Structures are given as C-alpha cells and as structure tokens.
Length: 159
Image (tube, rainbow, N blue to C red; front, top):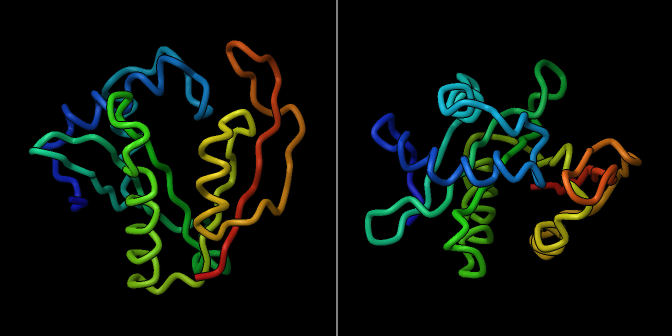
C-alpha cells in the first residue's frame, strides 16, 4: 500500500533512507548526513512525501515536487528509495507508477529525473521500462565511493 507520509512515519522513513545515505552510491548526499538533515531534505516544504508499506512497515518512500519554479513548474521530479530488505519485490515500480498518477492528478505535464547515477543500472532499466528516456548524460559528475567518477543521467517522460 502506498499512502501519503505523516510525521509519525519519520522514524521508519529514516530507516529506509539511512542505508542509502551511508552507502553514498545513488544520491549526491553527504554520507555523514544526520537523521534530522536527511528528513529535512526528504520532507522539504515543496515535497509531497509518500510511503510504501507492507504489514504496517515502511519499505519504501518517495517524494514528488515541481522540478523547477515559474515556467518549469509543470514538470514533476521525484526521488525514490526502497529499504534494502525490500529490493526486488516491485516496490520501486509500484512507487513510480503511483508517482506518475499523483503527478498527473496534480496537473504536471511531464516528469524529469535530473541526476540518475549511471552505475545504478537497476534503476536506469526500471525507469526506462516505465517510459523514461535518457535525454542527457553528465560525464563524471558523481563521485561514487567504489567506482570513482561516474556519469549521471537526465531522464524524462511526458505524462
């Protein structure tokens, strides 16, 4: 089940976010980011935050926001994280599908991912299977903790 997050979900959202933050492989966030700062980033005022639950436990979370302001505010942007123990169960696909519907319902015309780490091949394949195209490549802009400098991709689809 995917539903809007509430403040009561913060502890469980942190349990999903922390392994991603500490690994430093998929988001350009400091690996020593505190719980408070991570939750403030994820739940920024312009973000609509959702959680995916199974048996009352948060196993994934995403945010939906305008990609830009003004003339770019009709394009949505999202960030998704799945709990390590829930990977391979369709959680990311379900959250993406939910986010596309939520974006349409909010009047967005398109969705853009600005900084998909190219070495995150599972995510790239998933987003492509959800209709996203790679429309740009930023060479060597992400310092991966194991692989060194890798590309980030800009991915886009109309709604």
